[in-house]
Image 1: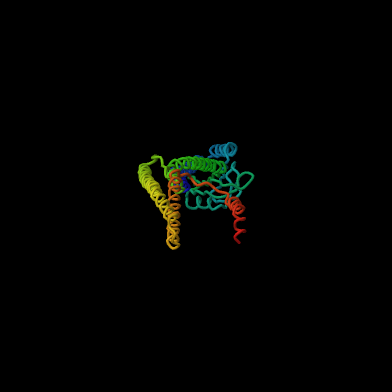
Image 2: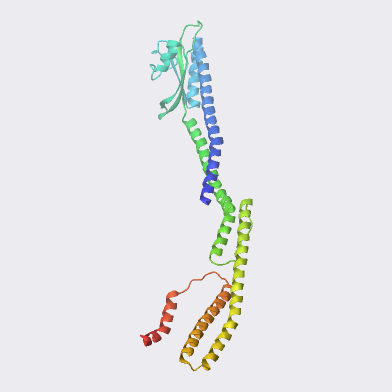
Length: 332
């Protein structure tokens, strides 16, 4: 029962943690991704506007901004001309100008977003891609495309730390909940253990065993009921013992007198048949006296009820055999 209470308590706490922690973690994850996406989108828009001006100073400013962006952030800026194959000096040609993101921006003037694998720095990492189709003086004219590649390894590490911290916190809370659940379960089941101890002692013959009236209302009611039943049973058994003791004591006197009378009759009778009948009657009286004496001894012994104790039965049997063996050998 204690194990079930602990499991139920821990399951309840786990459900509560999942209900409150997981949505918060997902919300925070979405917020971080959204902030990163919005930041990169603004940077791509700013650089696309510079490219859209079409003059040399704007391109030089874009080139300096691209260099600074590569130095200060884990990202990189790539620019391609409207034909998708040429560079726009002083900006270098991208390593992969035929990327579908460039094609979509140049062909349909669309801004694309991609959270996919890509090469960044020394190894392959998750990266953030933004393509902004800049426009020149004429609304329909596309002069080129700008793509901002932003490595999200730091973002992934941050998200892993967030989820890991919450997982460790949840494990700690569950461990504390299991400890508290064990304490609460033992407190709740303490009255039941007391009732079981009382029942065990009562079954062993200790009619004075009683259970403390503690715990919830239900266990208190049960303890009172058991105690009342034990009191009544103890009273009935005590009454029976008193009756047996009194009856045995009262029967000893007339049986003794009857035996004395039979002995007197036997001493004054010469008839062999009468003497035999008197001896048989005397033997029955003696047997009844032994029964009465046994009942009296039993009543006195039961008046002092104690819990059973283990007995070395083998040693007792061997001792009795040593005492009785000579008589047994003598009689064959």
